[in-house]
Image 1 (tube, rainbow, N blue to C red):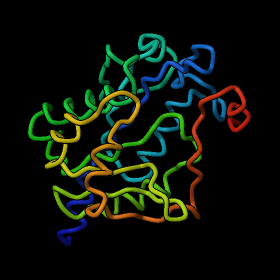
Image 2 (image 1 turned 60 degrees about the vertical axis):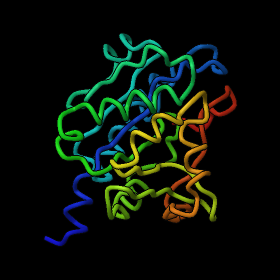
Image 3 (image 1 turned 30 degrees about the vertical axis):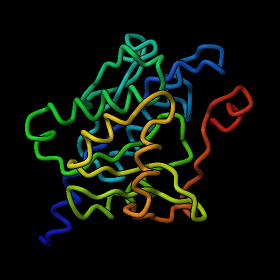
Length: 207
């Protein structure tokens, strides 16, 4: 097995699924229905089919209901009591859980971060970004016609600094902007659509 294959196999999925759907009338995004099942299940499946054997899921809004209604078997669940503060708090919670889980999540060399409200991004894009993992300090992001988007991959050596900079709804944007020259962009526009489910109008994109 080559060195790069070994490292790629050590990428852990990190799904941010804590949003409360404020512009959707307070409906938690994780529980929106897509293809007959809660949106969170579709996102977990995409991560697994994209090559992430271990998936951490950060829950927040209606966490107990999500646990009751969605099939989260095999996932590591992370509660974010501060979910209402924005996506940054969920990213912090997830990265801190990974770092604290014994040898960086059982030896995980990187976290591949995806968002629960982007059903147009599936396993193909995740696999491309995952395959670009090369080292513990790497930064990788999907791009769409040259514009950076999700999913993103953070080498374990960067987790602490990214968590420290993650605030509000900006997540890792400030960190990524500051380290823009270090990011490997992986074009995914031919296999994915990076839209968000944020408003009532966006619900038409769900099947």
